[in-house]
Amino acid sequence: MTCHTLKPVTHVIFDNDGLLLNTETLYEEAISTILSRYGKGKYTWELKLKQMGRAQEVAYQIIIDEYKLPMSVQQMIKETDALLLDRFPNSQLMPGADRLIRHLHTHNVPIGLCTASRKKYFALKTSKHKELYQLFHHVVCIPEEVEIKTGKPHPDCYLVCASRFADPVPKPSSVLVFEDSANGVEAALMAGMQVVMVPDRRMAPENRLAATQCIDSLLDFKPEAFGLPPFQ
Image 1 (cartoon, rainbow, N blue to C red):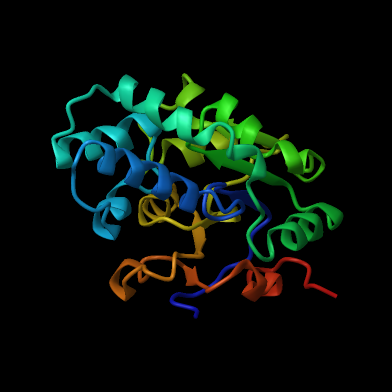
Image 2 (tube, rainbow, N blue to C red):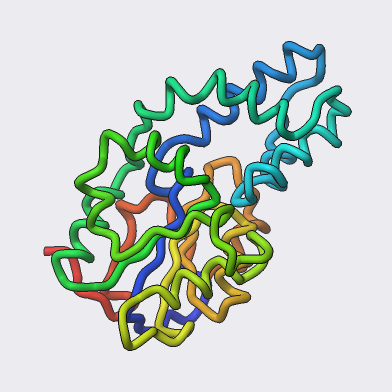
Protein backbone atom coordinates (compact mmCIF):
# COMPACT_ATOMS: atom_id res chain seq x y z
CA MET A 1 0.00 0.00 0.00
CA THR A 2 1.41 3.38 -1.00
CA CYS A 3 0.94 6.07 1.62
CA HIS A 4 2.80 9.05 0.16
CA THR A 5 4.22 10.47 -3.06
CA LEU A 6 7.13 8.34 -4.25
CA LYS A 7 10.25 10.03 -5.65
CA PRO A 8 13.19 8.58 -7.60
CA VAL A 9 16.24 7.42 -5.61
CA THR A 10 19.78 6.38 -6.46
CA HIS A 11 20.95 4.54 -3.31
CA VAL A 12 19.36 2.00 -0.96
CA ILE A 13 19.97 1.17 2.72
CA PHE A 14 18.57 -1.90 4.44
CA ASP A 15 17.89 -2.70 8.08
CA ASN A 16 18.66 -6.35 8.87
CA ASP A 17 16.85 -8.06 11.76
CA GLY A 18 13.22 -8.72 10.95
CA LEU A 19 13.61 -7.27 7.47
CA LEU A 20 16.25 -9.38 5.69
CA LEU A 21 16.71 -12.06 8.36
CA ASN A 22 14.00 -13.78 10.37
CA THR A 23 15.66 -13.29 13.76
CA GLU A 24 12.89 -11.50 15.64
CA THR A 25 11.20 -14.79 16.59
CA LEU A 26 14.48 -15.99 18.11
CA TYR A 27 14.67 -12.90 20.31
CA GLU A 28 11.02 -13.26 21.32
CA GLU A 29 11.55 -16.87 22.38
CA ALA A 30 14.70 -16.06 24.35
CA ILE A 31 13.15 -13.12 26.20
CA SER A 32 10.00 -15.12 26.95
CA THR A 33 12.18 -17.89 28.42
CA ILE A 34 13.95 -15.43 30.70
CA LEU A 35 10.71 -13.82 31.86
CA SER A 36 9.33 -17.27 32.68
CA ARG A 37 12.54 -18.17 34.51
CA TYR A 38 12.03 -15.20 36.83
CA GLY A 39 8.29 -15.72 37.24
CA LYS A 40 7.33 -12.63 35.26
CA GLY A 41 4.44 -12.04 32.88
CA LYS A 42 4.11 -12.57 29.16
CA TYR A 43 6.38 -10.74 26.74
CA THR A 44 3.84 -8.48 25.05
CA TRP A 45 3.74 -7.12 21.52
CA GLU A 46 3.30 -3.59 22.91
CA LEU A 47 6.62 -3.84 24.73
CA LYS A 48 8.36 -5.39 21.74
CA LEU A 49 7.16 -2.47 19.64
CA LYS A 50 8.99 -0.03 21.95
CA GLN A 51 12.20 -2.02 21.59
CA MET A 52 12.29 -2.81 17.89
CA GLY A 53 15.19 -1.21 16.07
CA ARG A 54 16.91 -0.03 19.23
CA ALA A 55 20.39 -1.00 20.40
CA GLN A 56 20.55 -4.16 22.50
CA GLU A 57 21.45 -2.37 25.73
CA VAL A 58 18.60 0.11 25.37
CA ALA A 59 16.09 -2.59 24.42
CA TYR A 60 17.04 -4.80 27.36
CA GLN A 61 16.87 -1.92 29.82
CA ILE A 62 13.28 -1.34 28.71
CA ILE A 63 12.46 -4.97 29.56
CA ILE A 64 14.24 -4.83 32.91
CA ASP A 65 12.38 -1.68 33.89
CA GLU A 66 9.00 -2.92 32.68
CA TYR A 67 9.15 -6.26 34.47
CA LYS A 68 11.36 -5.16 37.37
CA LEU A 69 13.81 -7.95 36.62
CA PRO A 70 16.49 -8.46 39.31
CA MET A 71 19.42 -8.15 36.93
CA SER A 72 21.68 -5.71 35.13
CA VAL A 73 21.70 -5.20 31.37
CA GLN A 74 24.98 -7.11 31.19
CA GLN A 75 23.48 -10.08 33.01
CA MET A 76 20.52 -10.10 30.66
CA ILE A 77 22.88 -10.04 27.69
CA LYS A 78 24.73 -13.02 29.19
CA GLU A 79 21.51 -14.99 29.71
CA THR A 80 20.10 -14.25 26.25
CA ASP A 81 23.46 -15.03 24.62
CA ALA A 82 23.32 -18.47 26.22
CA LEU A 83 19.99 -19.04 24.49
CA LEU A 84 20.75 -17.38 21.15
CA LEU A 85 24.37 -17.76 20.06
CA ASP A 86 23.94 -21.37 18.94
CA ARG A 87 20.76 -20.48 17.05
CA PHE A 88 21.90 -17.34 15.21
CA PRO A 89 23.83 -19.26 12.51
CA ASN A 90 20.56 -20.88 11.43
CA SER A 91 18.89 -17.54 10.74
CA GLN A 92 16.80 -17.70 7.57
CA LEU A 93 16.32 -15.00 4.95
CA MET A 94 12.95 -13.29 4.78
CA PRO A 95 10.89 -13.84 1.59
CA GLY A 96 12.13 -11.67 -1.25
CA ALA A 97 15.36 -10.58 0.45
CA ASP A 98 17.72 -12.58 -1.75
CA ARG A 99 15.96 -11.53 -4.96
CA LEU A 100 15.91 -7.82 -4.12
CA ILE A 101 19.52 -7.59 -2.95
CA ARG A 102 20.82 -9.43 -6.02
CA HIS A 103 18.61 -7.39 -8.35
CA LEU A 104 19.88 -4.06 -7.04
CA HIS A 105 23.50 -5.22 -7.07
CA THR A 106 23.21 -6.58 -10.61
CA HIS A 107 21.88 -3.22 -11.78
CA ASN A 108 24.67 -1.29 -10.03
CA VAL A 109 22.42 0.34 -7.46
CA PRO A 110 24.64 1.06 -4.42
CA ILE A 111 23.31 -0.77 -1.36
CA GLY A 112 24.32 -0.39 2.29
CA LEU A 113 23.21 -2.07 5.50
CA CYS A 114 22.55 -0.45 8.87
CA THR A 115 22.00 -2.77 11.83
CA ALA A 116 21.57 -2.37 15.58
CA SER A 117 23.52 -5.61 16.07
CA ARG A 118 27.10 -5.73 17.27
CA LYS A 119 29.61 -7.18 14.81
CA LYS A 120 29.92 -10.52 16.61
CA TYR A 121 26.16 -11.08 16.45
CA PHE A 122 25.94 -9.88 12.86
CA ALA A 123 28.66 -12.34 11.83
CA LEU A 124 26.81 -15.26 13.43
CA LYS A 125 23.43 -14.31 11.96
CA THR A 126 24.78 -13.95 8.44
CA SER A 127 27.27 -16.84 8.52
CA LYS A 128 25.20 -19.01 6.16
CA HIS A 129 24.56 -16.12 3.79
CA LYS A 130 28.07 -14.65 3.48
CA GLU A 131 28.08 -14.52 -0.31
CA LEU A 132 24.85 -12.51 -0.36
CA TYR A 133 25.96 -10.05 2.31
CA GLN A 134 29.23 -9.43 0.47
CA LEU A 135 27.16 -7.65 -2.18
CA PHE A 136 26.63 -4.70 0.17
CA HIS A 137 28.89 -1.72 -0.39
CA HIS A 138 29.27 -1.39 3.39
CA VAL A 139 27.74 -2.49 6.68
CA VAL A 140 27.24 -0.16 9.66
CA CYS A 141 26.90 -1.83 13.08
CA ILE A 142 25.40 1.00 15.10
CA PRO A 143 26.68 0.12 18.62
CA GLU A 144 30.31 0.14 17.43
CA GLU A 145 30.28 3.34 15.39
CA VAL A 146 31.81 6.28 17.29
CA GLU A 147 30.13 8.71 14.87
CA ILE A 148 26.69 7.51 15.96
CA LYS A 149 25.88 9.12 19.29
CA THR A 150 22.26 7.97 19.53
CA GLY A 151 20.50 5.02 17.91
CA LYS A 152 17.06 4.71 16.37
CA PRO A 153 14.64 6.54 16.36
CA HIS A 154 17.29 9.28 15.97
CA PRO A 155 18.57 9.83 12.40
CA ASP A 156 22.31 9.54 13.10
CA CYS A 157 22.67 5.92 11.99
CA TYR A 158 21.17 6.45 8.56
CA LEU A 159 23.05 9.69 7.94
CA VAL A 160 26.33 7.96 8.80
CA CYS A 161 25.45 4.94 6.66
CA ALA A 162 24.65 7.17 3.68
CA SER A 163 27.94 9.04 4.12
CA ARG A 164 29.86 5.77 3.63
CA PHE A 165 28.83 5.38 0.00
CA ALA A 166 31.63 6.10 -2.48
CA ASP A 167 31.89 9.57 -3.99
CA PRO A 168 29.67 11.27 -4.69
CA VAL A 169 27.89 10.83 -1.37
CA PRO A 170 24.13 10.86 -2.07
CA LYS A 171 21.79 13.50 -0.73
CA PRO A 172 19.42 12.09 1.90
CA SER A 173 16.50 12.65 -0.46
CA SER A 174 18.15 10.29 -2.96
CA VAL A 175 18.32 7.42 -0.46
CA LEU A 176 15.62 4.78 0.07
CA VAL A 177 15.59 2.89 3.38
CA PHE A 178 13.93 -0.47 4.04
CA GLU A 179 12.71 -0.97 7.62
CA ASP A 180 10.42 -3.20 9.65
CA SER A 181 10.21 -1.15 12.87
CA ALA A 182 8.44 2.10 13.71
CA ASN A 183 11.62 3.37 15.41
CA GLY A 184 13.59 2.68 12.23
CA VAL A 185 11.01 4.38 10.04
CA GLU A 186 11.17 7.47 12.25
CA ALA A 187 14.97 7.49 12.07
CA ALA A 188 14.99 7.31 8.27
CA LEU A 189 12.37 10.03 7.88
CA MET A 190 14.21 12.32 10.30
CA ALA A 191 17.31 11.78 8.16
CA GLY A 192 15.37 13.17 5.18
CA MET A 193 15.10 9.82 3.39
CA GLN A 194 12.18 7.89 1.97
CA VAL A 195 11.39 4.61 3.68
CA VAL A 196 9.62 1.42 2.69
CA MET A 197 8.18 -0.35 5.71
CA VAL A 198 7.73 -4.13 5.79
CA PRO A 199 6.10 -4.50 9.20
CA ASP A 200 5.32 -7.46 11.38
CA ARG A 201 1.72 -8.55 10.68
CA ARG A 202 0.87 -7.57 14.28
CA MET A 203 1.78 -3.95 13.65
CA ALA A 204 -1.25 -1.70 14.17
CA PRO A 205 -2.38 0.41 11.18
CA GLU A 206 -1.56 3.68 12.95
CA ASN A 207 2.08 2.59 13.31
CA ARG A 208 2.37 2.08 9.55
CA LEU A 209 1.14 5.48 8.39
CA ALA A 210 4.39 7.48 8.57
CA ALA A 211 6.31 5.32 6.09
CA THR A 212 6.62 6.51 2.50
CA GLN A 213 5.35 3.12 1.43
CA CYS A 214 4.12 0.11 3.41
CA ILE A 215 4.15 -3.42 1.94
CA ASP A 216 3.44 -6.86 3.35
CA SER A 217 6.61 -8.50 2.02
CA LEU A 218 9.77 -7.66 0.10
CA LEU A 219 8.22 -9.77 -2.65
CA ASP A 220 5.68 -6.98 -3.11
CA PHE A 221 8.25 -4.24 -3.76
CA LYS A 222 8.18 -2.60 -7.19
CA PRO A 223 11.59 -0.97 -7.80
CA GLU A 224 10.32 1.13 -10.69
CA ALA A 225 8.02 3.02 -8.30
CA PHE A 226 11.18 4.71 -6.97
CA GLY A 227 12.91 5.09 -10.33
CA LEU A 228 14.96 1.90 -9.92
CA PRO A 229 15.33 -0.83 -12.57
CA PRO A 230 12.27 -3.12 -12.61
CA PHE A 231 12.39 -6.85 -12.06
CA GLN A 232 12.46 -8.80 -15.32
